[in-house]
Length: 363
Image (cartoon, rainbow, N blue to C red):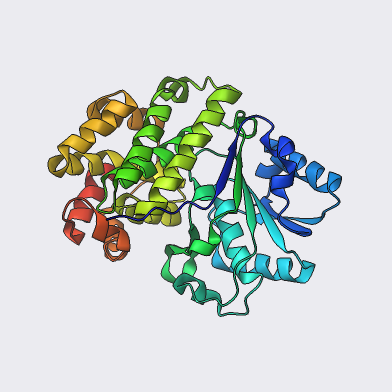
């Protein structure tokens, strides 16, 4: 038995924002949630504001979202949206602005303790949202998840609720074609991580497996492009679609220990999320191969490479100079093993196992 829910309408193609302008308008007063530079540099912000002006929609650009947004930043964004009187939001950016937008949509219409968001304790439905991703990685535009930095636990923590699915998402490779190569690599590996984790975890179903393999086939076509940095708009649009498929997959399955263990690398070492996942992904797949050999074979066939070749690809594309010591790895494992992700891991996992994985991958 399995359930399948995907309420987000996804529109894919060059100039899709302008050519589907009416789909972008979800109310009469809009707050745009974006990063400090990503929305403008990508060209997405300019396209959106042009549409809003043409439609006579009053708007406010809230561009205070940095990498790994904190719960405090999101609560402040909610206050700004409420004071402005916004009745819909548009999220523009990578995973950080898109995740932050979901939390802002909740805070904008609910008077609540800031931390209750993690328990889904809010009365009023969040503001409706449209998403325009400017990286091809997180798939946040097709998930009910928001990953926020929580300093009181010295880590990142997620909340999930079906009401924070975006109403519509626009995927246009023009917005990602000029990304720095390392960001393109990190985010593509993040998408791979979602597809592979969702394909192998205990909540996988026929529906999620079908979508995961399609996403892996798409990214597999462009492995050499991720190596050499040779991109065009169509390739970038395809990678955006693959990332959205990754979001669709984990919306059904959730993620595994790769994510819960990777959060500590991002919080404590400022390692980008996709890179953090990629540093751990090869060892995760090796251990999964022992219990799900057929699935690993299918996944690698979809990518067009062997597991050993995939591990070499990860190593080639993820240069990491961070220093780790055994004491901090043990400390991180104490938090990671308590995450819900551990319960859907395809193989039995203990804290000692996580310490061993950390050591093998990082020391």
